[in-house]
Image (cartoon, rainbow, N blue to C red; front, side, top):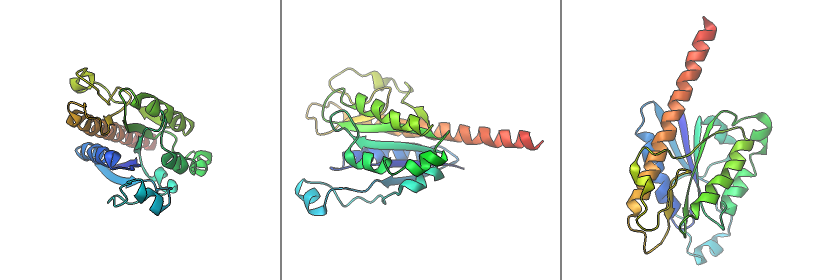
Length: 209
């Protein structure tokens, strides 16, 4: 059984919606156990509420140490000036012990996001990959398994790097396409996790012979 974690930060609920779609896609794959968790909010509660943050999210809060328990992790973070949020950065900065132990080497890592502008997702995802590479993770983007990823009619969030939603954009013609891309990304990564787990089982069986 391959274990997949969908780990996200969401301030206003857009990434929570995306993460649920990613998890739905991952759960559609046989032989996969999927957990949906979020990183802690770092703003004081009164400040977050005044800013309109959505604090009543159902997903439990994750701890950095438990990342090593999974075969694949899909990270979700909104865009902040072309980068991940401070909340996600703070969480990842606590994974130094995992890095030292090599706890994430060979595991699959993938990133999805939300953005307020067209193309705003691209640098957020690709800059996020730097951290995954330092951990020795196998990075997965979003392949063209669905031709809608190349849709050019109006603003579009998702790219070959990963699924993305243009949050609150009044001219986004069909946000359901980006949610479909999020589901597809979850399915794709889960399929990779199963293949990787099966190859490791085969290798161990061959070594035992």
